[in-house]
Length: 306
Ligand SMILES: O=C(O)CCC(=O)C(=O)O
Ligand SMILES: [Fe+2]
Image (cartoon, rainbow, N blue to C red):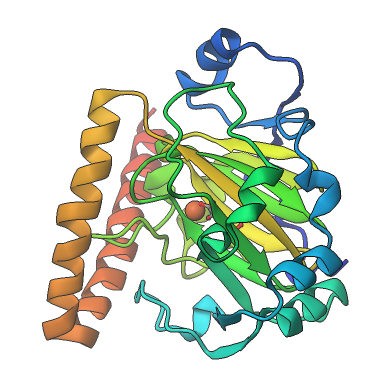
């Protein structure tokens, strides 16, 4: 297991453990976690899935090793405010799986991978566990990452709920709910933070130290419920992979906001980016920093006035 980032807990952010539960009925789950938008680890969500035993690296190599896959590199190498990440190379899936199995340290990742379009028989190995309704069954996505890779702090643009089940190794997941957005240097017109919280620079991003969230190490067979709109930052401590199943945001407001983000905000960002490229990304970074620092200055003023 690698940890190239140091311990986030040692930093100023307050990070609480995520609750761990088993045996929840749908109503209790809804009332305690969906409605309140609280993350929770579901220890038995995947307990009846053949996948938890079957999806070894050998099995994936045998079933899908011949497909050519696109690998993405470190998100920091991609201009800090650019959202689209072009792949850095294409390799046979089996070669990449070798890297994961051998815990080769690298930034290389595969994200939002619908392996099931290529190999539909893999759909037999899991089910949409009926703890909640509204699964987006056309979008079962897999995420793969080498030991030492990380996923920038973001929330999912469509505001869907995510059930993320882990295979092959450990992932460290740091979460913040929407109340913390004011401390997280959100880039305007995106759902991404400008800050690299794995290597937090508190001089450039002082507000990060006020952020309060959760952190958990997700182990094989465990599932984390990430409620719609929750910020997540992910560190691959080992080469590993997971399956993310999504459900629609249960509130009408959430659905509308999600659709608006995807159809209007993202398109607008892409459009302006096309014409103004660097000026647009410089503007977004500047705004993210200014806005967050204004909030902090305001907060400090109030505190001193009390
Ligand atoms: O695990 C990963 O690599 C990213 C997962 C993620 O961001 C998601 O499921 O929304
Ligand atoms: Fe995500």
